[in-house]
Length: 211
Ligand code: SAH
Image (cartoon, rainbow, N blue to C red; front, side, top):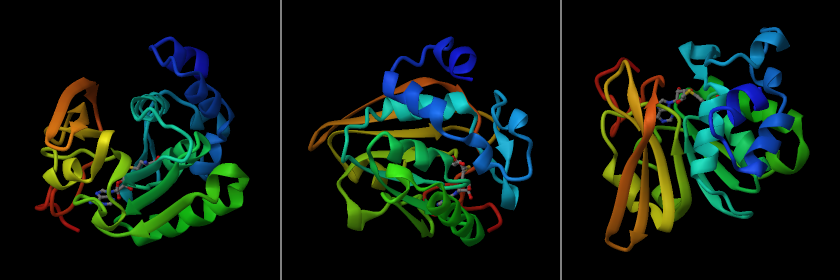
């Protein structure tokens, strides 16, 4: 996986490659054989959601440029895999999931995994499309579901110098947008390329989808 899916497609950060190589992805997709867990695609988890493709997890992690101790907000806990990768990179992660059952099983899974990472992940239930103002400013925000546009609330919750990584665009396909806050009133943004995510459902997401 690391050689063929990550290195070959340009993931360079040695820490990201190391963490992705050591994280047991099969733990996050119970019921699927380990051989499938490392496939080059998103895989189904409960509640009609998905665990992201390995490349996407690696790329989003790389774009966040995690420094040890960074406080990172993740919107869309899902299986907990991305949160585990970020925590093992040294981040203190707050992760919000709208499906209570997914949040609960992610919590249990992360506790069972142990290690340096799992103690520094706080999984909460709710609509994360407006971020988590109480914990702001964040040293990085990653949204692992596709939004119709970049929520202003998320830009505002970035520390100066921090990045927001978020898939933005129509339901079928999005652009992986990177928003960097370069000053108190300055934000730059660019696309890192095309991607496909399940929808961000909520107030600053797709509000018309059935909850
Ligand atoms: N990061 C996950 C990928 C999960 S898929 C992993 O590594 O496995 C996206 C997740 O976002 C889904 O579980 C979905 O329920 C959740 N989600 C969608 N809209 C949300 C919202 N507004 N707030 C919180 N979670 C949301």
